[in-house]
Amino acid sequence: MDEAAPEDKTPLLTVCVIAYNSGPMLRRCLESLAAQSFREFETLVIDNASPDPADAQVAGDFAVRLVRNAENLGFAGAGNQGARLACGRWYVLLNPDAVARSDWLAELVAAAGRHPGVRSFTSRQLMAEDPSLLDGLGDVMSGYGIPYRGGFLTPDPGDTPEGEVFSPCGAAMMIDRALFLETGGFDEQFFCYGEDVDLGYRLQLAGEPTILAPRAVIHHVGSATSGGRRSEFAVFHGVRNRFWVVAKDTPGPLLPLVVPLHLAAVVYIALRKANRDQLGTVWRAFLAACLGLPQVLRTRAGVQRARRASTLDIARALTWDPRDLTGRRPVVRPIRPSSRSAGA
Image 1 (cartoon, one colour):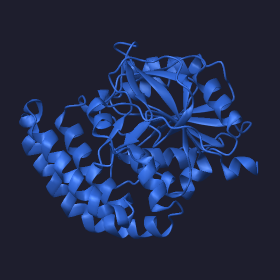
Image 2 (cartoon, rainbow, N blue to C red):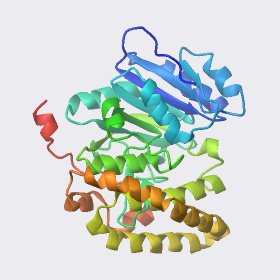
Image 3 (cartoon, rainbow, N blue to C red):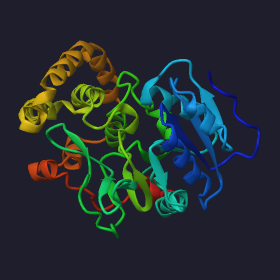
């Protein structure tokens, strides 16, 4: 059930950690938040009906607001729940399998101060197992309708300039809470995986940029609570939800190009030797995507009616170079002048 908000001074940030069978990783995550140099924040932990009682026990050792759900709402549902409960102006999401550097929140706040017209930020994510490798520099959306974390498993370039990315990664993002709620938050039909890219796509459609704050650094395990990146759960939800993102968010004039490219890319990826053992899961995901398509198309109607960005704007925000996708190359573009910033 939802816990009532505290009556203390309103914090600038609410950091929400959604836990599900997170165990020891959750402790390390919360320890990193307790060590933050920036202190004007509250921590909200949502125990998303974890079968293992350790998550709630660990959270009880820290000064956090704890909400214990009676059912698993998925990352999307719990993320929306956290936004409704949050007290801060900024809503920050941190995965329970992530450890934040002590200046992580300070760097996010500093980035927001440098860009007063921007309301969505994402972090530089390093692999927890090997911090010399990137876990991601924001999310990239290809013209093939296949999103990916920019630079995943490539060497960390270090001093990366701030710039615009297609979408924030839900593992470590900061968004104006009012904007999150105005845009409908995460699509709960997705349950888990791809809900952050769908949100980022809708921000693009609304003309709201997302900026990479490269000095805001976390170390991330990734998919640790869902059995790993190649688990049946991860593959099923990833394939299904990517199809829904394409169907829901792609502007009409781009659909005749993106849909065939997306289907071809899914088939190509599934038929690669390393992935052939997942063909059955991919097929089930495609069938599930088709079954859910009527609801997705109903949602699409509202999303496209609210679109402010032109088709050309969206085409430019995608990457059409197949080498970006195959190499998981980061796509960080120069920051465009913002009319919101000019009027700030």
